[in-house]
Image (cartoon, rainbow, N blue to C red; front, side, top):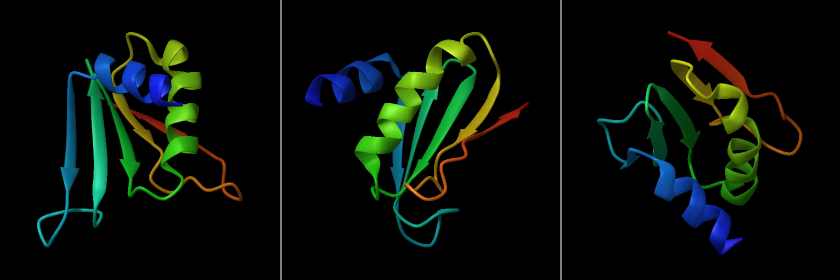
Length: 84
């Protein structure tokens, strides 16, 4: 699993973590890949979210928009891509 994190986050142009009053989501993680942004949300189910992100990245290559993983759980598995 360490290698998956390394591969995904190494390919990101920017990774931000936000906490406090200036955040849209408390303790949220955002990764940017070119023109595509992945809103990962908090660290709940982080391993599973990164696995999902890795699985869908090839389909999003060259696209511009936001991939919403912040509400992903084993019970709510929908991932929304919102094009810009």
